[in-house]
Length: 371
Image 1 (cartoon, rainbow, N blue to C red):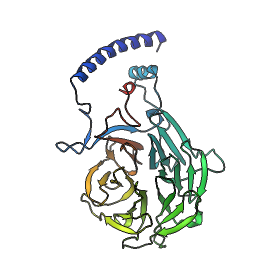
Image 2 (cartoon, rainbow, N blue to C red):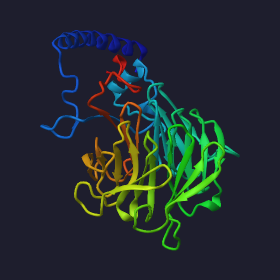
Image 3 (cartoon, rainbow, N blue to C red):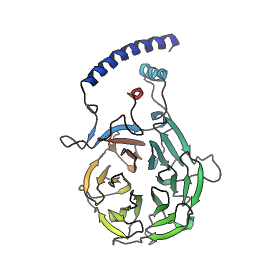
Image 4 (cartoon, rainbow, N blue to C red):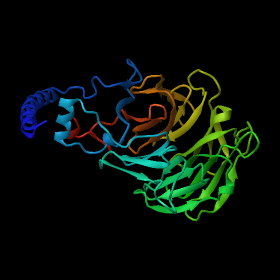
């Protein structure tokens, strides 16, 4: 396409945009519903709780786009390209910066939505400390420091928010089969999940001092009683220090005190709402509500802190689309209450915004340039 033709198209489009902007301003003065036409959960006539907001499949979905790029794609049909996923699994988010572990690419992919940046942590070409092989569990503290439980190295690897290696925690001999990880908001205590297996009773939560690296008393062993686990998958820490553990083989979530003392459990095996089939990861929002991903159901269910089911989002599907999942795995909640969910098969992250938050508010707010 010649530069003169591109300039002509730009001028025509800007003129058209001017008319559209005038119309939008006029509509705004009438007080339109900003969320009209958006995918909402739960379905009407229930009051809206969340809106589908966006999908991230590659770095192209967060990096800035020039006007020339936009118009060239509009005229030629050229597709967005960028660094995408191999096999994403765990996820953590801090102030709109989304960290996703990729077990095939052997890295953590970082998508910074508000800063429009992308980079990787633990790349293969890096030598020495900080290299990753199979990043499974991811979590961040309130400063944005990233904690990665690597299933191959059987260690917790800690980075600052920008990916600078800080330290390793844990001895590889501590673990049988590492999985998820939970960290308290202050970054003082780490809860590392050991799935165990058929030949061991080490179905437990390993606890570490996040600063010194000292191993503290473990929580749990193999079993079905409160405080015991069968193939645990993930752990997440609420703001008040309460620990929630996805007890996969027992098809339940256990609520524990910070020292591991059992408080309550919820969930059971089954196909009804509030039950589980293949629960994977969990997240907790600022109100203490617990979000649990179920791979078999193709959704995540939301419970209050006492285990009462509030709602669910997502449908199992063989075709991709918003809120459609085949192998959902990781989930995270940001400080604004936005939900980020990973699907391994469709290699994507879906983002949902709470209905109480306007789209132009929060860390990943939608700006005029995005509209």
